[in-house]
Length: 128
Image 1: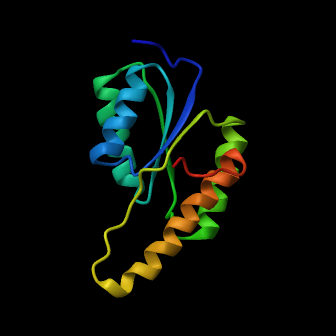
Image 2: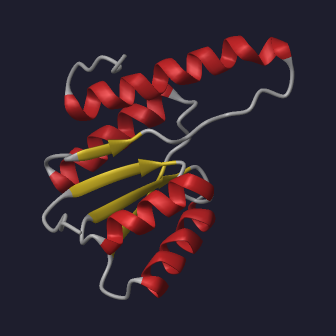
Image 3: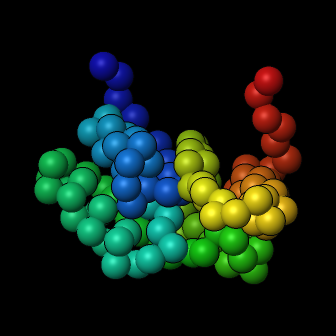
């Protein structure tokens, strides 16, 4: 297995499930992992679990509500101010609509996640 030492990865939705497992595996490969969590306590718990499994892991937590464009932009600015560059972005955060009328809000949330991608990496296009 290769190494990702010297690589900075940002993972949204990394407080549980696939996102947390992705953050763990990246840490195991030696990457610096930045977990983005809406809830700082859940982010700290995920960090503790990862560093418990990988004691030398470099894992940071940044808090942001990705449904807020202002918070997305602040997250991007804070991240770039601290790290200078981003090597891997895992846009894993998601929302499950509770009712059909929530779909429009979810489309807006998806647009904000793309804004985060562009703030961190420049213009991007989805791979089809």
